[in-house]
Length: 473
Ligand code: GDP
Image (cartoon, rainbow, N blue to C red; front, side, top):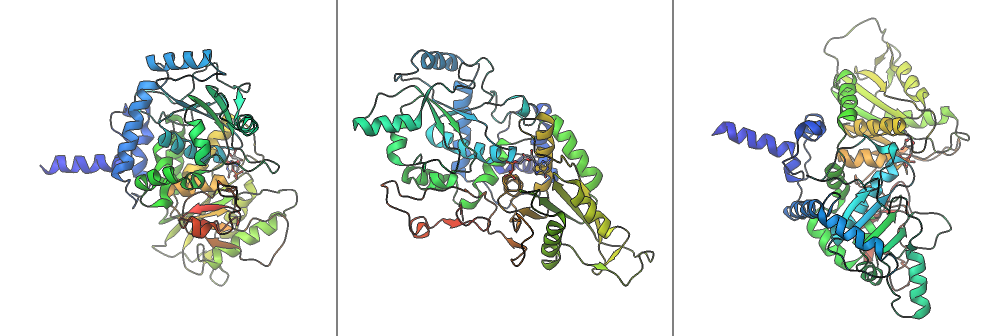
């Protein structure tokens, strides 16, 4: 009958066209069931293959995850044979944090994709700073590495670099450990990573516990591996929405976060006809004058007609009826940007006749590392930005990447000012909502320099906000 038809449609919307599984206790994670009231339905449906991969993953996670018998068996075995190889029923991938929350979230999505590709169980090392931010993503289990795990903060196991060196020196496969720490984090002096290459993946396959540290969205490098490429292409026939799907699958605001997000949205943001997200990240606050940044932001927004000019002719007192309202959500560590923009439009007419309202949910002044309240504010800002109709972000900021990916938004990328230079386009519109991978390989797996990666990897393109980076199209 039509009622059950409507109920099915409703379920389909709630579960994001099958991306999410049913069966969760709804009260334990309200956002999972309510996000579709706040975010427009995505035009991108997950493929059947992705859906089946996710359901299969959930099954493995439930069977092998913390508190299961297989978990205890496998982990005990691994712990007792750290430095020599061992075969276990379940294989694991521990994610460890590096850098700010945006970096952590994009890297966590990449790590989850790697877990899906290699049938490993993803466990996250969430310290106090991330408590109460997210719901559990996997049905009937937890993704948090148990506090009493011997592998918590484990820095004394063999590292991947050493393994490779040994391998080279003996020219044979060195004896494999059962735990391996892999550092994919980017530093300027680090050697290039060949993590994705077949010969390395072949070795890693036999190691039951990998501990991974990165701060990068290394998904494009997984595409460079022929086997992974086949799998990912089946999972994502549209390649430029990997983060959009996996991010919405993994990251559900906890009830505490959801209360703050949904009430802020209803009180301030829902009133307008259009919501504009503006993320102003100042990477070099000491050398960049505030005025230069404000000029840059306005030049971008006015030029692309994201916001209207102020009308200096008409008196503000002459009220008009049925005015369109644009609401701007400013996200920045610095309160001045929201204040300046608000003051600019306050009690003034605009040439388009629209009314502009400006809100900023927080201004933390400084980036703080591993601080729970600070992270909560960051998560709220990223989520609210992702609900925008139009989004303006700062080039190179992973904070903006999370918002654009969750919201399936192609942002206008503000030029990244580091002093008061001028003479460049203030912003450019991005061609996809995927995060940019800032440090892609520069060589093929055989060591030859990658001169023209576009013809080798036609689905990768240079990022607009960083020409050394790549992302999927
Ligand atoms: P990125 O450095 O811009 O790539 O982004 P990250 O998220 O990795 O690191 C920046 C960190 O600074 C965030 O995680 C927040 O802790 C803080 N931060 C930066 N911009 C904002 C903002 O607009 N709002 C809030 N609440 N925090 C911010």
